[in-house]
Image (tube, rainbow over all chains, first blue to last red):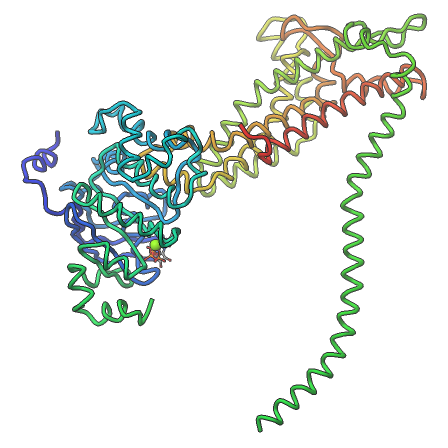
Length: 268
Length: 316
Ligand SMILES: Nc1ncnc2c1ncn2[C@@H]1O[C@H](COP(=O)(O)OP(=O)(O)OP(=O)(O)O)[C@@H](O)[C@H]1O
Ligand SMILES: [Mg+2]
């Protein structure tokens, strides 16, 4: 055990699930994030809003370190997830991705069966002896699907390909498949933008169910959604965090001009 | 003011209308002409294939109806077509030659091409990837006589030396040569199949903590399996129809092989080697065309199923 890890154990559980300090990010020579300092409270739903291209996805993707697969991304600064810097050279990428689950804009279940989708990440991480759901595969599948309110609909066709489901069901499945490895943080990049209003409502309800157990950071272009489905709200603009406040406060009395303009739909 | 503008616009529209009507007419003829031309080019491929098939069938079908004893033809290994008194036409040994060489070639080519395709599509990046792709295309363009030459001049003495056998022109030699010949095209097709797997599957799996290799074998390979199978089948078709290299590297001896060090003779090579010596329209000539029909049918079936599989019509 390294000193850092020991120190992390001694500290009381942090209030902040994600603690970002001076995060700068470049795609090649293009800088997409500027000195982002952002602390996301544990067990809460935080929404992230801002005009297109302001860096919301970029920030989200750097918390899971999935940006790195591009190969030309450079990062400075640090992000502590549950008290540990995920950009520390000693940190295992696999562990970061176990702790931080990601849901994408377009539902992307793997082209394998529903059951195998749920067990995919569990199978990856069970070998490592980490903290995963201890049940049998059948129990895991059932419990995960129940949590996302999908069990009754799909319990008779677990062997069918997941890509045959409706988009709403696919997106719920994409959330469900993260749960068996007990992530601490769920990142969601516009999870409802491919769904109809009914599907959106269903996913939002699901988020409220998951609140408390997981820290949820959700990007959305839908002001109404940010307002009703989140407790805190972050407003970003041109790669910088402009404002971070309780959702109820931000939508009533925003501090910055830009925030007010954006919320009232004057740009973006 | 407003009225006059409208009026002048109307005039322009009327004049321009007549003008553009003529031009459209000319365009229309060009368009029709091009359509007809393209149509002719398009169906010419079909016409050629049909034409060849009709020709081969016409030349060979006489034998099929008059002399062909199916049992003797397919099930005996005795190929003595130029025996003056009692010619024998058994192609079992020739089929065994083609099958053994093609089979071995696939054993060589499948791991090679699959490995290369996985590396190019999933692991290599930037310049390495581009360079490799160009190289694979270059390899695919090497004429088959050059491969045959390599079999004859390089592989032959090597096999004699390493395995201590009297002759190095054998199933092993031809199989390796044919495998190397088929590998580039199989690599290209397999790489296309891998690239056709949407990137969001890879991203999803990586975001859950899968390593590159886990992503490849758990997600990409299963998703691409139809395309990969199609590539293998096209390779089989290639091996089956290849003539020059196998003529040079097999040893060209009619023989059902017991081991990979036996010389064999392929169906294609037999046609190539013997057709020039036959009397046009004679029995031997006709029998060679009958073999041609057989090759045509098998290649057609193999390529068609490869095509169907690549298109994913057949699932599973
Ligand atoms: N892979 C990439 N390569 C280069 N530049 C990128 C890449 N991805 C994003 N960018 C750039 O980084 C900036 C931030 O992009 P990002 O996708 O994070 O914005 P966003 O806030 O999520 O926008 P949207 O609301 O449209 O999803 C944009 O200017 C974008 O052009
Ligand atoms: Mg985005």
